[in-house]
Length: 355
Image (cartoon, rainbow, N blue to C red; front, side):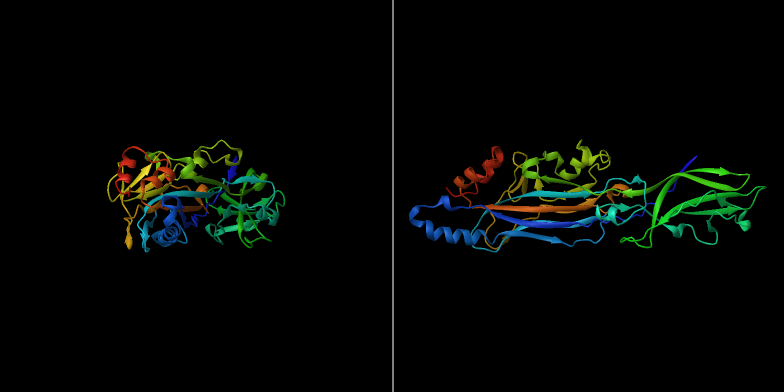
C-alpha cells in the first residue's frame, strides 16, 4: 500500500502590490500657432496635476474569502478641465503544485525559486508518537525499521489493544542549510510491513517540493476583455487556460478566484458614471473632470474567493497597476487620441467637448 503523508500549511500570502501610473497625452496640436507657447504651458501644467485618487490599505496576508477595499477615482487639483479614462495591467505569480524530488530541499533548490512542502510535526506529539529506528522498541511492541532512511525520520503511534497491537505511521525530513532551517519537509513513500517481525520497510521515498513560481501578465488595452469579463483577473485566466509549457499543471486550478468589484460603472454611457469600452480596454468617465473635483470611484474592492485552494494560491502575488490617461476636452483631441471611442460613447464624450 502506498502512503503519502501530506500536510498543507494554510499560508495564503497574497502579498498584493497595487500601483497607479499617470500617463498624460500631449495636447499641443489643438492650439493655433499664435497661442501655442502660452497655451501649451498652461494646459500641460493643468493636466499634469490630474492623478489617481484611491482608498487602499495593503493587507499582509490576503485570505480566502477576504474582500480588500480598493477604491479608485480621479482627482483634479489643477486648473484645466479634462477628459479621463482608466485601464489596468496585471502581474500574477502563482505556484505550481508540489512534485516529488529525489533529494531533500537544499540551497540549490531554494536558489532556483523552489520551496518545500512543509510538514507539521506538532500534529504528532510525544509520547503518543515516537521515532522508529533500526533498533527494535520493546516498549512499543518491538517495532523497528528495516534500514536507515536518513535524512527521513519515521514516527509511529502504537495501539496496544488487540492480540497483536497496531501502528500508525508518519514521516518527514528535517531541513538544514536554507531559510527553512529547523523545519520539516513532507515526504511521500511506499511501505512494506512485516507484521511477524514488526519491521517497517520504506521504498520510493520522494521529497515534496513546490516548483519555482510562474508569472502571467495582462495589459487590458491589448487583451481587451469583454464587458462580461471585467470582474475577472485576465492574468489568472491566462494561467488557468494556457497551453504554454511553463504553465503545465496549472490548467483548471485558477478558475477566476481573484475578483474585481466595481461601483459607478454602467452598461451604457451614462452622465457622471464610468463606462467600459470593449474596443480599447479602457474605462471612460462620462463627464468633464473640472478643477478641484473628484470623480466617483470606479473600482471598489478586490476579493479572493473562499474556494481558493491553498495548494495553488499559497504565496500568490497579484499586482494590479491602474493607468490614467487624461486629455483636453476638444473633439479634435478625442478623434485623434481616443481612436477606440465610437457609437454612443463617442456621442456622450463629444457633448463634453469644446468645438
